[in-house]
Length: 353
Image (cartoon, rainbow, N blue to C red; front, side, top):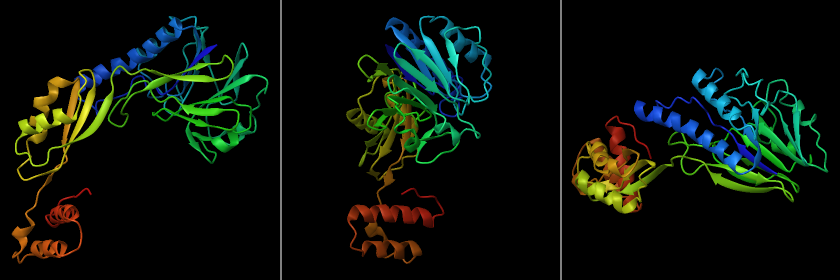
């Protein structure tokens, strides 16, 4: 039997603060596309169950467009059961899929769905069950037992927490989790594992890199394969432009350091020491590189190289500060960094070390 583990779809996510408006609308559509593509994969590969481990929607009252889309996808894949467990984002969402036979839901008490030699359990977190849920769970050791939960793994109990120590030695083969948007896979005990599938599609520069859903096979035990799901990858990387004096040359240096993919989204952080004005570097470098990928952000993180010798006879507080640093036994690189930050602070500016 084949099962898909996924979570944190976040249909209807507002991405206007992450990207320009037009791109945000495109990315909202691509979130929907990723979910539909995953459902198509399930039907085409004889997957019996898709486990949705929370946060299918981004808010308790989803837009009608996103609800209609979700229920339509489920209806149009009748050979697949969709097990929908609510998360912290869609906890108060009202179900409208009671007439869809292949949509199964959960509550704040343990619910079980059985398939062949597999039992799938799930429970939605609340203030009332945050402690008691662990003592009320029981599973048949002769069956393959899968548990669906949504929350942050922890050593303690609480709402939206999954207390790993209290889930051990309960005959669980696979603990399917949602809430963390990065995939991971760890031992639970001698019998089972626990895993976050991550989100299907990165929504911003806090959700970088590849994204997957987990394909689980229960033939002869639990076997797990990560299947790529994202329509686009989002990447952030540094590019050292030390010593350069113009934006075009800086863009050429970036191209030497970054292998751009036409369909991906990038943030390039310009780094290094330069001795020229970089006020327009972000905008100009972006113009020179924007045709190489789907979307590009450029951030100027360079530091202006400071001529320490120029402060040798400076009688101001700045001069005294620079001389004290220069007389220290610190490496030259550290001296430059300390002087750079110190001078910014003396000018009343913020400094990020």
